[in-house]
Length: 442
Ligand code: GLY
Ligand code: MN
Ligand code: MN
Image 1 (cartoon, helix red, strand yellow):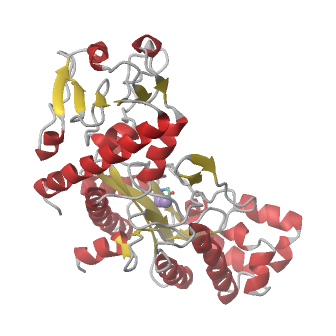
Image 2 (spheres, protein in one colour):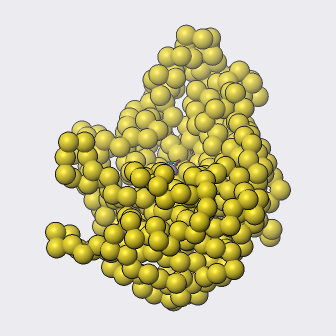
């Protein structure tokens, strides 16, 4: 694992890149300064119990602290960024620890005891980026989340700095280690809930620190794309496990899916076939390539597997053309990854905004941009047996191409998804996930 000092040293260069990007974005937006709010603690309706706090990702891009409700970053081009760190005086709760570590050197740091104290540090007319908060009209911001600024920041977040890549690499290592622990728990006979606990323990995260809720599905549960039930029951038969679970380093996420099959099952061949197809798709992650090309190639590879495994009776070309592949593979092949598991800007047309929506037949494709050096994307094809979609196919005629006996044989396994996190680099793709698993040894 990268030492904290290594990440801190990289952070200083990251902060300089962020400052330069922000300066250009401010100039385009006609603003002289920006205030980025972390956000505030939310409480449940009619209750005094807090929801987990998740800071505004733009705040986290600047300051790698998760527990910072009521804090702000103020950036005025040409000056050191100012971190207004909210540390209340409180004897009910432990106040957040003061920021520490080499990364803090990038900032002027000031501790505030009340968020309202930040107002005195807001330059006149500064733009505000963050969730609007009660009373923010009185702070006299020049604009709140102006698109000319925010679009540019979102666009820039698509490509990662060396610091961000190091964090993502570390998150992938943590995720791989936890996936290994989860696979062991599955083989030892654990329930979904127990697999979840084994996964959490191996990450060292508490649940609120995960980048997204763990998807841990035994058997038919794998047919629910985002299955998060965590059943405590031991199924009578243990056929398969689909686990889609992440981890984070300084708030940068990994997003990894593996599908495990009990020994000797016919489903294992389909899983192996999809794994090979997934690696071919990962090899396509290169600067200059429009990401939708990878999505359409995924449909061709899924079609070939459907033919090979007897799930369809038509040709692979016909399976794609008639939309049969979308019955089995109904989501996009992946998305941008970073401070958010589904990172922002995937449908943005250009640096200065505009939308590049996905094709009408592929509404769940989350990324339509052309890949650039330093972009990090997931590659996550899947094949599932989803009753709702199979019933639709029966009703709309696509069902005539489907071999229903083979579907019935494999449906008890739910489905398979394989997901890796890959960096587009000029000299070829860097698969963070495969490298992380390889680093674990056997
Ligand atoms: N874990 C959610 C996704 O793969 O997009
Ligand atoms: Mn994903
Ligand atoms: Mn995932």
